[in-house]
Image (cartoon, rainbow, N blue to C red; front, side, top):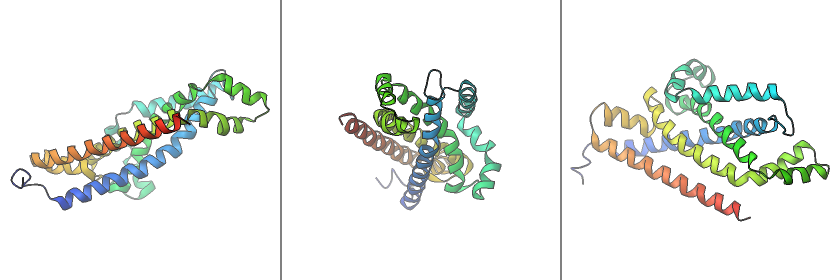
Length: 221
């Protein structure tokens, strides 16, 4: 085994794994904080919705589609000046967070909008018939009813963010992706590449299992 993994420095692997988890954790939390209200607003301002505003919906939808259409590697480079202005650096874990959020939040917002569309309109109309305000309808009916779908969206977004953190290694963001590029690819250390890919596969599977169980739990409520 030592011969097969001769180039693997387990200290570097542990550090890179911790960096990946930090990037994933921070960016996922911020993605949900920004993406959830955007998704709710996309739903509410849509045609025949509670706050139907075609102009607002069109502009917001255009911005979301624009950010979603930019390849993440390009977004990393384009956002370097903004990232430096916000966090003071474009390198390391801190430098990866803004582009990760900018890339994932629009994606998550669309998933939230789709989950809200699945809520039975009859339930919404019943809530309004009882005199509920728009805010009460959102927080007491829409979000609770759409919770399983939103949790499924969080799971899909978390898995996507794992691949984004790997791509962030291209610009020196750290993590398993950076290790795979610098040692596995540039130095032709296949064993390092295999270990980093295996760890990312384990991380993705763990996220998917946790997400599926949460969705199943809240679907039965």
